[in-house]
Length: 118
Image (cartoon, rainbow, N blue to C red; front, side):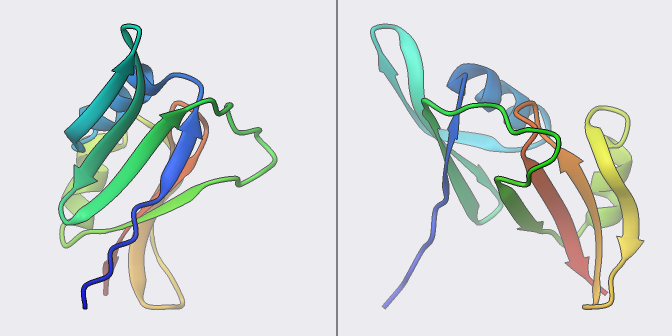
């Protein structure tokens, strides 16, 4: 049996969200339009996938409504490539649980942690 989890995140503007994620290395797999407006999309980053659906709102500064955790084997180069292009919340650092990671916020103020095992 193969099980796959694909989180779905509800966002205010699917097209803008897709473009932002593509700009940091995600790939568009599939999308749906309703009356010419993108209302759903499936993107991948390596083996991981995430769906974005219309109808959500921007996260507040005080709440962590959505956290995506992306495992990567190249966290140092990814950080160097992204650090000047995205909202870095936590710079690259080592954790007590054995990961080297950094945390960014996307255009909807959702959190994305990129990490690699130390």
